Image 1 (cartoon, rainbow, N blue to C red):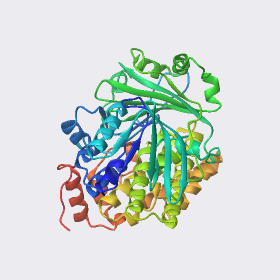
Image 2: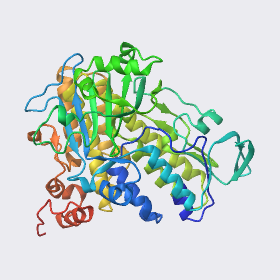
Image 3: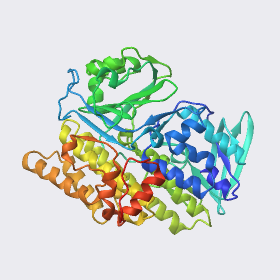
Image 4: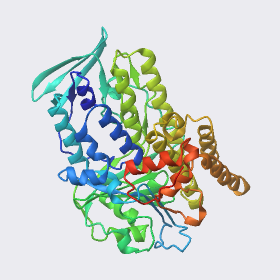
Length: 501
C-alpha cells in the first residue's frame, strides 16, 4: 500500500509497533492473489514487487527472500485413530492444481523475509518508516487524522490527510475506536495453534503415489478430520509452517492448554499418519495460540480512515482467502486515494469488503460443517475453485465484469446459488435433501467450470490443463484464439496444441 501511494507522489509514513523480521502466519498465495500482485505492480510501476507473483521469477530474482512452491491444494481426509488409507477412486483425497509446472507456480511467503523486504522497498521508495512505535492517541478533526505516541523514549506526532489500518485482526483502529466486532454469523468458534518446524517428512515420501497432478507436498497440504484441519506449508529454506485450526467442541477434546506443544502432541495422537509425518520434526519458532481465530468488524471506514480487509476481518486459512481479499481491497482503496476520498466511495468500499467477508465466511462455515462428510466437503470446495479459476481467467482476458465480487458472490447467477448451497449445507441436510444439494452444487458450477471440475473420471485429481480452458472459451465470452494468446502470455509453454479459429 505504501509503495503504491509513493508511486503516485503521496507522502507516506509507515508506523510499526514491533520490528522486522518477525514470525507471522498468513503465508499461502493463490493464482488470483498473484494476478492482483501483477496488476498492482504494472499499474504503480513496481517491477521489484512483480517478481514475487510467480515461483520461477521469485526463485531467479530474489532467492534471498524465503519462499516456497505452491502448485495447488492438497486435501487428505483422516479418520481419527486410524492410519490414512485410500483406494483407486481417491475417496480420501482431493488435489486441485493451480499451475501446469513449477515456473508459473504459486508461492508460500516466508513472512520474516518477505515482510522485511517490503519494508525496505517502501523505505527505498521514500516512505518514512517508524518501527518500535507505540501510538497512544488517535483523533480525526478538521478533515485530518492525528496520531500521537512514543518511539525509543521520544514523542511522535503525525498529522495526515488519511489513515490506513493494515495492522491485522483486532488491530489498532479496532481497539482505538472500539469498533463493534460481533461473533461470526455462520462459522463456529474456532481456535488455532501453530509454529514453524524443520525436518517434516514429505507426505509423498510416506505415501508415494503415481500419476498425481503435482507432487502432493508442493502445495498447501490440508489434513482434514471431523472438527478441524492441519496445514503444512513448505518453504525452500527447509522450514515448514504447520498448525491446526479446530472448531468447538473438537478443540475441547484435544484440551488446548498453556503447554501448546503438549496440545499438538495430543492432537497428533489422534491422527497416526500425520504423527508419522512429524516424527522427526523439530520446532524452530515459538508456539502460538489464537483462542479466537475468526474476527469481523461491522465498520470498515470513516471520513479520514479505512481498514484494509485484513484488519476488517479474518475468517480462516482453510482456502487461502486472506491474500486475495486484502489485495482486492488495496486495489479499491488506492483508486479512492488517487483523488479526494468521498464519503460515497468509502461507503462502497465498506459495503464490498463486508459482503466479500460474508461470502467467504459462509462457505468456510459450510466446509467446517461438512468435515465429517467427505464427498460433500469435496463438492463444496469446488464452488471455491470454480469461482476462483473463472475470476482469474476473466481478469486475464480483460473481462473483469464477467466475475463480479470475490467468489463471484455479486454475480446474479452464481452469487445466489453459492448462498443457497452453503445455507443448505449448514442445515446438515441428510438423505434426499443432501443428494439434491450435490446436484445443486454441480448446476451452480457448470456455467463457470473452466477447469474440468465436473469431470468425475478425474477421480478428484484435477491437473491444470490448457485444453480445459480452451474448451471453455465461450463461457468467458472469448474465442479459442484469445485463450491461446492468454496461455502463451501466462507461460503454459507448449502444453497445448494451437488451433485455428
